[in-house]
Amino acid sequence: MTLNSHGLFAERVTDVTHYTDRLFRFRVTRPQSLRFRSGEFVMLGLPSEGKPLLRAYSIASPSWDEGLEFFSIKVPGGPLTEKLQNIKPGDEILLRPKTTGTLVHDALTPGKRLFMLSTGTGIAPFVSIMRDPESYNKFGQLILTHTCRTVAELQYGIESVATTKADPLIGELAQSQLLHFASTTREASAHQGRITQLIDDKTFFKSLSLDEFDPAHDRIMLCGSMAMIKDIRAMIEPMGFTEGSNSEPGTFVVERAFVG
Ligand code: A2P
Image (tube, rainbow, N blue to C red; front, side, top):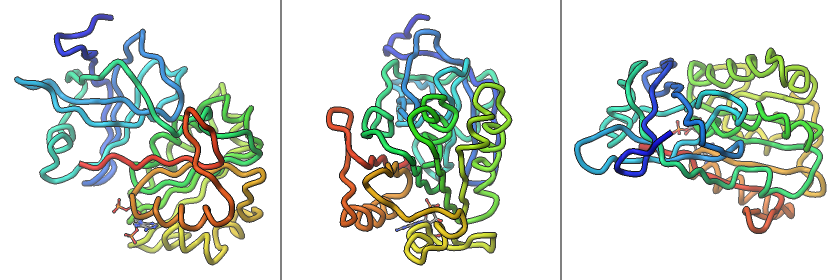
């Protein structure tokens, strides 16, 4: 696969699903030479007359998938998403060849349970991680949480968990090892409230019959709103969790979800 004059891969959109007026999912062809670790992001954009505007997008598909999947917000007036939300199959998408990120197994020390806490489009890297067989080898249990404003915004996560559990490669592992907890903050649903509040009042642990966080064997990944990340960090650091990076693995890792 060759790079264009800006050093970018030119790929094609294969599939677009709109969930709400704020959220959509799209799939693009994958450059054969693009290698990435589950949980990483890539710089993505649309062709334009001058230098293309690129934004960081977490890859939601696993590394064994022949296509690339992304889950995006639509921001009114957002420099990229205002146009990106109109893409159709066959349209061109540009990708920078290098992927990177901290929501990767390499940035965490070994543990027994992996908690993946997300809000909004922050679920995307975890959709990749929960479809990676390595996740089930490294951890006995994977617990995915997703908090959105409305029930409709939870749909992508619900669908992705169902697809993962039905997958011929990892379905059986996911059925026994993957737990999903979804909550809404601005509409009634089975679990209402911010994840911070539901951790604090123990609703989250009780409803999944889980023991509370313990840095001795739990590992935590955070992705979503800055405010959520800040609040969870303030909650788990005093418990003894320490932030990891690719060069120095720890017991939790963080990435803010792309907005704009
Ligand atoms: P809320 O509706 O109470 O603001 P957004 O759609 O704005 O990106 O937010 C995604 C989700 O993250 C919403 O459900 C929102 O709840 C929640 N959220 C926002 N701030 C925090 C926070 N500080 N801690 C936990 N969740 C938060």
